[in-house]
Image 1 (tube, rainbow, N blue to C red):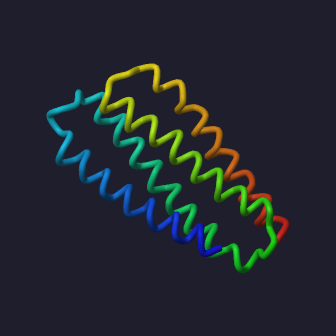
Image 2 (spheres, helix red, strand yellow):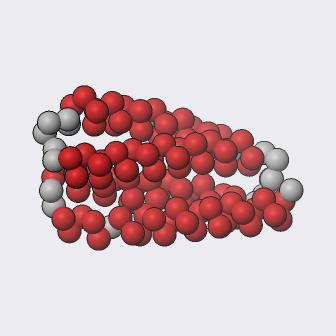
Length: 123
């Protein structure tokens, strides 16, 4: 799936940009705790950008795999909800944004479960 390769590459680049911004632009502006929250967002953003690339590469090998397709979408949704909420929480200090983070975590977990199902079924 070309789309997941594109989403993976765009998100990997975005994770690098946001990581550099955090390291150079936010240092000294955020508390040490909030900088760690931000870094966690970047870390999981990159992990799942790589996951999207893997989904895109395997999509041709596991044609017509609904589980793999949904795995990719849940990784993307997880990036938005998990990493996005951590970016917003750490830079705004609005603690209620932390309510969103677990939904992104659940999306990540579900994406990997679907990935496993696709691999077992298709390989």
